[in-house]
Amino acid sequence: MRTICAALSLTQTTALSGRPANSVGEYISQTGFYQSISLTDDKPILEMQSEFQDISVVRSKYYGKILVLDGVVQLTERDANSYNEMMTHPAMFSHPNPKRVLVIGGGDGYVLSEVLKHPEVEHVDHVDLDGDVIQVCKDHFAWGNAWDDPRVSLHIADGAAFIKNATAGSYDVIIQDSSDPFTWDEESGEKVELPSNTLYSEEHFQNISRALGDKGVFSFQAEVSTIWCWRFWYQSQNVPVNVAIQ
Image (tube, rainbow, N blue to C red):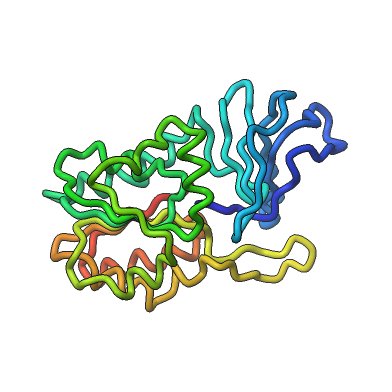
């Protein structure tokens, strides 16, 4: 899942003219940019706390149901395809015969559902740390039946640990749809490492390279611009890389 920066609450009001009181938004402290989506007056469809994060499903008049984690919008029904199709299909089409695929993160299931559209796929391992997010998306989003596909094996586990133990050359395509490795404290401006930082370590990328076959392709979320350096490391290892910038 994707995290931009510290987020405002679902119902926080502001002095900014024209901003609806009932909205969900996020503020990027590095640039001063703020964006929000207005919600309907209905109560949240779901609010819960998992072992790892706050999970909400809310509704917008224009964007339909919205998945929100720790106050940050992850996707909406209306435009979820824009990001997830680009995460998935360039990588899948770059491989001549993508039979075995690994999806790390992407607990909302949309990347998984896109992978399964490729008829060549014989097996997909989906690894995500938070099983509650997966259950919520099964229950509330149209693509939630992706996990019912017999080609899918779901693993509620740490993605870094999973790939560390993977057999060498076992995957044709690996797609990592994870949170940013770090953010910036809104008050102090100091860098704050996030739990997903382990998914952007040199050791983790080396393990991914080892787990890919000879023509393997790796696609990963790289909203933080400094992650781009890993693209050049992979190119030096002759691994095709698709970097998705949200």
